[in-house]
Length: 257
Length: 270
Image 1 (cartoon, rainbow over the protein chains, first blue to last red):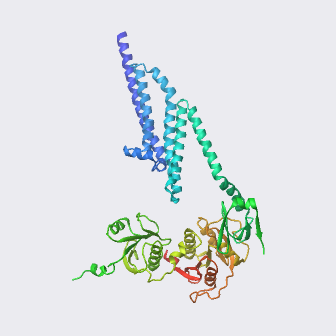
Image 2 (cartoon, rainbow over the protein chains, first blue to last red):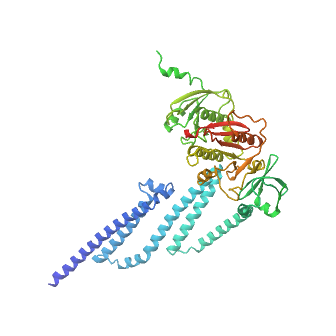
Image 3 (tube, chains in turn yellow, brown):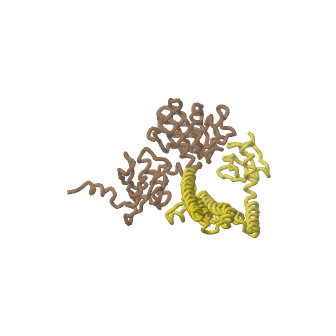
């Protein structure tokens, strides 16, 4: 009787382990499919079109969306296999499982952050280089590359922080880098920014308009164009391009006849 | 025994360059593989990746205008020289290539058609957009009735000083540019106003309701055109603006530069 009962429990263990495994596989497969659907209908394939991550994925005969969807499915497969082993009491997986529960989410998030970071970096590079394509200067591609690696660097930093690796030094590096960038652009773009601020006022209030005869900063003539950064004044065939911050600093004389 | 190909061979005999107007990709590849022959592509967009390319701002309805524009553009880019003989292939009745013409560069006279777009004060895109608005207005009219309109593009400061307002300017303190999507509707409504639209080099609509006051002395425009065309011709002679006129009586779009009629388009053809 006892013998029979024991064999029943062992069998029951195996049956329930198999059940767990099957349910886990089915759920994993379904989650993978649903994620795939959601990502595709959210327009992710178009958004990642042309990025290098997508190109690498294509080389291996897959794409970014299926990698993410398959990844989510595989996580569930692994968890269910571990759980099935635990139920069958073949291996003492309790410890592994407990650790997995605490670590797995942060690792998943870290991997996702890196992937999103790579994609965002690629996308940013594409956008910037598209925008700069009108500038026919080969060296200008440095800007696009810088933007890309900045985004990737921040993503890796976030991912490392997520899985609890000390990122203090890297953080200082990032801060120094950002500070240098801000300082650099503040110095380099100072005139442009003040011009733009003045230009906003000029466009909103229009103290003078196209066709008015004005005198600004030693130049006088007829206003031909006012945009955010400059005012174009023409006199006898010479066109003066005057930065808007000069209009503010030096003032403007509107000549009425 | 001759076949039609021999007769046509005369047309392309000893040509210096071959001009392809809006060719298909495979057609261009076949033409490009011919040795010792310069191939120039003339199209609204360089879709075939040609090295020598002239951008066509409008699909001119007159094939002669299209060829003239392409040749003048190529001349301007030093792709051909005066006296060269070229052959042009284009689509006259169908979208594909169905005709070939032989043209001697320079004999057609420098009409300035290319300069109208690329060498005017206003940006080429702005002139193209104004043409678009005028053609649209000519085709649809205002509430189904034909309307006339006069757009003066570029050199807005000088134009404003050579004109006066007929009424309050509806575009005062606004920032509307001709390329904006709302503009077609807006100009359709404003086209019932008398007077001219003044547009700046960068495409900003500076004013409507302007009465142009250039001196019309010695301005020659084709007989039979009205006061609107005369004003357009005269203002472009006095300033470096381009004037684009939609005629109320015959519905044609005409462009003036330096006091001369440069281009005539029929909106119905677009």
